[in-house]
Image (cartoon, rainbow, N blue to C red; front, top):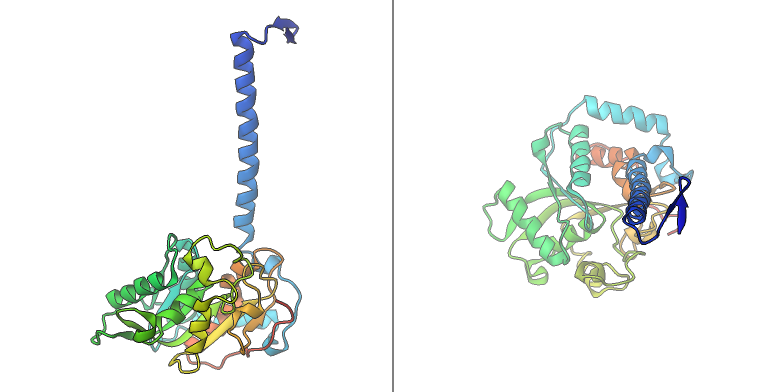
Length: 298
């Protein structure tokens, strides 16, 4: 027997069961609200790179923040036609919105023509070669090529796994197993696990296995790199706990790195104005502001 509001209530009574069920629902709702608040906070914080940027200066990218901001404005106010289309490739399990935001930024800082930029996402993909075929097909559908063995020439920006997708799609046909080869003039990679991802410790699917340090897939990409027809331009963030700054360039090479953020550093590289400005200047045919160098830590 319990006493509720001064009245005895039997624990087996319908009244008690109703009160208990109502209490349980309120507790579950509170837990759900708390979890939703944490997730919402994480999603809101991730794009705010400037609010949490770590102070790690890079002598090879020694441009003050006020100059970066001024250059960002100049690029937006002075559109420049692109020499070739730009293809943005998303990361592993990446939402299409992230790719669209990156593609929109690139368009605004270059030609201001959204038709010059195509974004390809593959949130359910679990095998990099399969994604490569999908990407080549999408490019050829958007910009048809007269040559059945190759796409038209494009520039590629690959976020995370997207950089590996681009490198695989650009392999010679006999090596990639694809029906058509990606013809890339330049491949810009943002936080791409060229040497493997720090977080890839359990092969939950083929794509993760292909991104594990020491994976045969990565070795095959590296073996073809010296003879590649494209220029590879890798960018990295420090404090990248998913990939690692030094892992964001192939063995024997250094990335262009900038100070990452205290949280979500792997993801905020896609909104880092320093990276966006340097890529945009290269795409516009202007002098780059940054040079590759070894990151201070991985």
